Image (tube, rainbow, N blue to C red):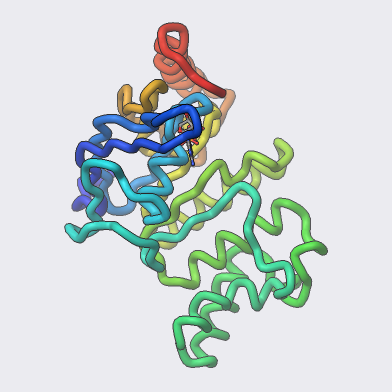
Length: 260
Ligand code: ADP
């Protein structure tokens, strides 16, 4: 990928939580520059601080020390420029697919004609136009996650933050959504930061895999995934990278503490 300007600068981020048995250091000394349009996977074992870092980027949590800046401006609260997609979808159950997708722009006071146009555009992009009037409980897990993605896209977001978004889906649906996400990423030019504990998923999706270690959470290394898309999990090149990333991930698992 051509060198793009930085969109996000994470500088010396540390995070302590107050737990009942004392402070927990969830992150220490995290430094990372993310370029516009990159597809980043944060990879690590349970408890290494992936979700904490993502929540800090989203503005849901504050770093105890250090800074996060987007386009040079400090990130200290949630904003429509950063959209979050969760594993459990977090849709409004009382709203239809169309209403869920149009929720953001409607509540930002955008003219109703424009809201309708945005909603139709992104509903089509995620292949749900035929299901516009259904409610979340009438949808499969994969369809719910498509709604969640479209809902973020209507906010004219710059960055998609995804916390193990396909973790609850069966393997076939997960593979399909991975493909669709890559298509959406390519057609929109969004920057994607995707949390996963699956090496295969990280190598399938990312331009760059950020391997994290636990106790306290830190960045171990960044691995460029220089494979053409669509990627083939059965190809020798894919397997070499999968093996390298796995080796890197497991090399510190033996020597570090995790709580998951
Ligand atoms: P991951 O997403 O990699 O599984 P998390 O970011 O959820 O890791 O957690 C990192 C560490 O911070 C873990 O030790 C976890 O128990 C702790 N932690 C996370 N959230 C809280 C919280 N709200 N209060 C106390 N400790 C927390």
